[in-house]
Image 1 (tube, helix red, strand yellow):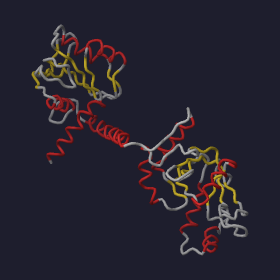
Image 2 (tube, helix red, strand yellow; image 1 turned 60 degrees about the vertical axis):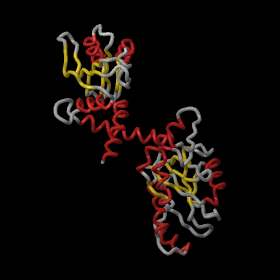
Image 3 (cartoon, helix red, strand yellow; image 1 turned 90 degrees about the horizontal axis):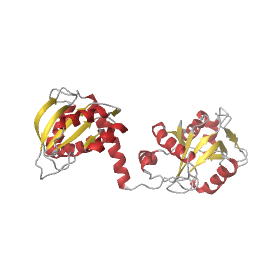
Image 4 (cartoon, helix red, strand yellow; image 1 turned 45 degrees about the vertical axis):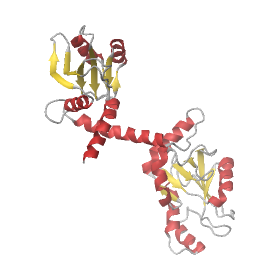
Amino acid sequence: MTYNFRHDRSRTVEILARINEDRQISQGWGGCKGADLDLRKEDLVNKTFDHYGLKTTRIPSNLTRMRQFQDGDLLVTPHLPEYGKVSVHIVDRDFPCCYNYDPSDDTHQSHRIALKDSFGLAGEISIDHVTLLAWRAKLPWLRFPVLPIPDFSEAFSDIVTKMSSGPPLSFGPSKLDEFLTGLFEKVKEVMTVELRKMRPSGGAISFEALCEKLLLENGYKVVQRNQYDRQGGDVDLMCSRSRQDSSVFEGGEVSLFVQIKKHEKKTGPEAVNQVLKMIGEDQYANGCVMSIADGFTEEAERLANNHGIILLDRHKICGLLVPQLSKLSGEA
């Protein structure tokens, strides 16, 4: 589990020293000498309520979440080591073995959690990094000392993995372009799921119909459909376009032979060969394979590069589709 673990920012220097020297992160509301607010005791909530003269038991009840800590849990501490930064700490052992109570701490930082490791203590992780934007947006509402944040576990786990498995990394504030790129990646995933649900061909809503629309929007007209030569040559669409114009599909030639594949993982060289056999010796024709697959095999790419065949996978098709969605939105 991943927890948001707030700290007393007036004690940042002491808390940092404790992490670095003792591998312990401290939490406030621990009282001081004679308070005996040990988290392992059942009367913690009432005793904390009385000791601090609180109006509700919400804070002391929240502190009991530390009893749920397990070995390997992540503690995310915003504004530590400094404002605008965040550090991530790994809990060492299950509660109560990870816990220690220090009644002699007159700063009220008596609750101590043992740590295996910490990341970001040199200020390498900005709260404004693009991977943390969703967590950052919710941070003002995460006001209690200890709150589980399972929705953000993947983001923080990914940062820990990257920082622990390679050369020193920095996760600084992200620029708008990084955010937009990340947003487009998420949009592509949603679009891919929906496109792969479509039937391959036939009817008004099919992957072949979608590809045809993209071709039409880029200035082509469909001359023939479903052509094959009985010798392995096969194309779904034969298109033409004025040679004075150019597009992402060809280099200004007159004809375009298009093979459409509704694959998922990778499309192999067979699709490229099907187009090549239909093109034959026509020096004015171009070829294209459109596939909803994640990509093309190395052999397919090599064959396509050697013969000038355009390969469009799901990433490029989604990129072509986004402007069409924008156009429809403008017409609504």
